[in-house]
Length: 298
Image (cartoon, rainbow, N blue to C red; front, side, top):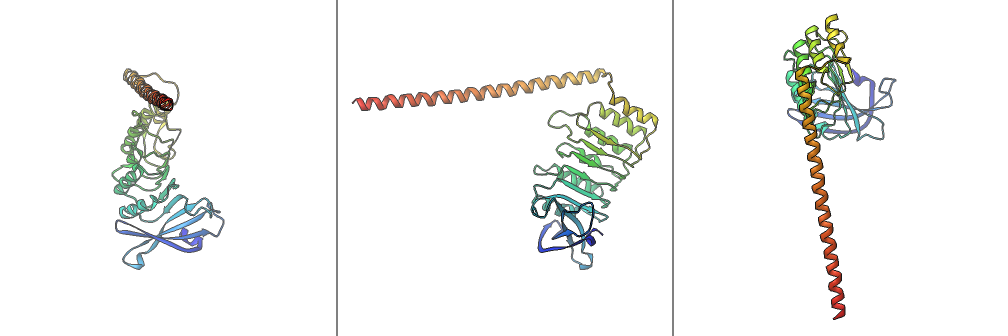
């Protein structure tokens, strides 16, 4: 396990409780050459009623040893992470405003866990921008919740999650264009080594016609044939809009113009109020000076 690669760095620890789980956090640092060499790690250990069930589950990484209050990366691999642990984890990460990366690879996260993570990401104070849930499959195919409005994710990896055509259709629907502020912010999506076929590729192609945020899409290791590849590639080159797309584009332009007009009107009203307040203040100052001169004359 990863815990074997770390030596105890400090006796400092803290306990955080959430749901039915308690996390005991102990500071540690890398002692060998790894991909994270030079970073400091916090080991989050689950503590349950039976001592024999205790196990290191999460590693919390820092950019440098002098910034032990500013973690940037929290990860776990090959550990069973249930909903109660995710609730406790949520209570933990709320205390770290610098945490931007969450990696939970092969943690047996089911559909309830996916829904919980989506809820965590949608909270106003969430700072998670990079999410890796590789090797977490579930029969409900609800990974699309992670792409829902409000998550503010930039990077999402769902490799080897057994996502099929139905699952990718839901993801594509959430990544299609939606009016502000409900449009997706995702710029990198990794769907490698799933079970997506030509049907799913067509859904992805339709999504790419309207999505304007996605910059990288990985689909290697799926079941997409040549026809499915063509469905995607056709949308990456200039294409002709359908009648429905033209109508939708006009609607968006009109809404955008209305929004600009509202902003300009609000700005004008604010300027008028500011100018009126300044004039009134200037007038009161002039009256005050005149009053002082009259009292001096008397």
